[in-house]
Image 1 (cartoon, rainbow, N blue to C red):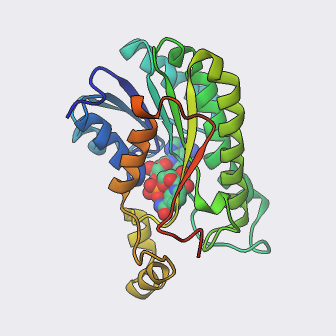
Image 2 (cartoon, rainbow, N blue to C red):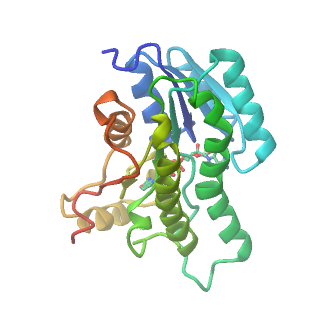
Length: 247
Ligand SMILES: NC(=O)c1ccc[n+]([C@@H]2O[C@H](COP(=O)([O-])OP(=O)(O)OC[C@H]3O[C@@H](n4cnc5c(N)ncnc54)[C@H](O)[C@@H]3O)[C@@H](O)[C@H]2O)c1
């Protein structure tokens, strides 16, 4: 299939997990894909296994590194059609009392400030596209109290949903759409490493559909939000959570 043939797609946090699945899916659909990630051990082999993909090492919380990554994309492709702000996550479930200021800042910076820095830097290249799309990774945690996560993560993801609306409102007159996707429990390599069998089963049991979402399923939602079919949708957060939100 070639739904994204000739399109230039940037996926942040694409060395592993949801970002990697999204990068692979866009490439399968014919896109030229840039994988932007701070992990320069896993990122290069991930990109090397994807047709037409390029790895760019970048800490998305550092303004100068984001500018350098966007410069490299400009030199390589001259525009961006789709920006997927996916980098983020949190190291472990935490309560308020155990959250240090450093942990707060790290989580807010990697989940929220990264979206601001990358979107702002990419804007001149997005403006050169005839149908630019931004897709931000929010979370069910940003719509709820954040089951099994951490206060700074909940706050940062709620911030991502708000920033999505603010950017969408500002960029609508230029035809650039901005939407967020809010997954719930996704069975990435990281989650499989962090949780034992019993913990995985307990989490799955708390989801009405009785299982984790796969990274590949999340990737298909990201592709939909980046597709021509989603062209009349902007400023929305799409919640895909196996029924967890209603439960
Ligand atoms: N896995 C889930 O259950 C789940 C649920 C809801 C939302 N999400 C969100 O989806 C996104 C992807 O999640 P995942 O589970 O695939 O994450 P992951 O931890 O498996 O991968 C995240 C990637 O982002 C990169 N990254 C983190 N901080 C970075 C920075 N400052 N600069 C550059 N790269 C950075 C990491 O190196 C890593 O490759 C995240 O925003 C996460 O919050 C995940």
